[in-house]
Image (tube, rainbow, N blue to C red; front, side, top):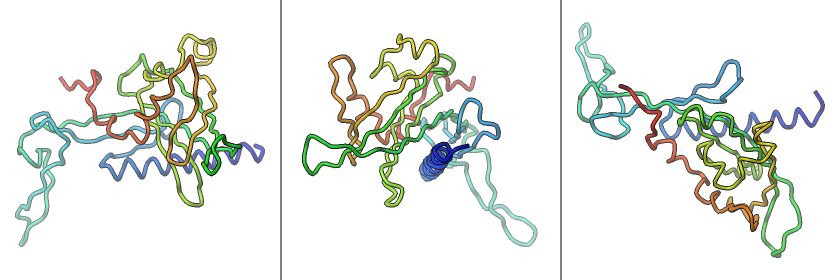
Amino acid sequence: MNGSDTDKRVIGLYGEMRLAMELHKRGWQVYRAYIDEKFDFVILKSYCESCKAFKNAWTREQPYGKGTRKTVTPLCETCKQDSLKMLVRFIQAKTSEGIEKKTAKPGEEVKHFSFHPKIRYHLVDSRVFYTWIQVWDQDTHDINYYIFKTSDVERFDDLQLDTYQVTDNQKTELPINKAGKVLKKSSKYDYSAFDDFLNNFDCLEELTEGDSWK
C-alpha cells in the first residue's frame, strides 16, 4: 500500500469516527460491520408506535434484595405501552478531503472535493442512506455531512450515465466553501439539492415504506 492509499484510509476512518460520534449524540445506537462489504454502519433508534415519536424504554425502580434497583422495561417511557420498535438505518459513508484552488471571489475560502455517489442499493431497501463526509480541516475539526437517501442521487445527477449503469458510481468534483455551500453551477445539473442534504440528520428519522413491523 503506497502513501496515498494510506492517507485515504486514514481520512476515511477519521470521517467515519466523527460520523459515528454525531449519530450517537443524536440518540442512535451505532454498529460497524465486522466485514465491510455493503454498508459501513447499521444504526438503531427506538420508536414508539403508540406515541408516534422516538422514545426511550421506561426505567423504573424495583425492589431488589434489601433495596431497589433500576430496571429497564420494554415499555415506552411516556405511554408505558408495549409499543417500542427499533428503527433501522443502513449507512454508506464516504469521506473527502478538499484541495485548495483559486476562487473567483477574493477572500472567500473554497476547496474542491471529489464526490463518488453510489446508487447500488437504492432499489433494494428504502432504509439505505448515503452520507458524504466533507473534511475541511482535520486540525480545526471543521467538517460537514451531506446525508440523503441513495435514491436522491437523481436530484443532482443523471442515473442513466454509463458510469452508473456499469460501475454504479460517478466521480464529480464540487467546489465548496467553508460553510458547506456547493458552488458548482451547471445548465444541465441542479446542485442546489446539497443545500437540503447539508447536515441533514433529521432525514434519518423520517419513516419510510421499509419501516414495517407488522
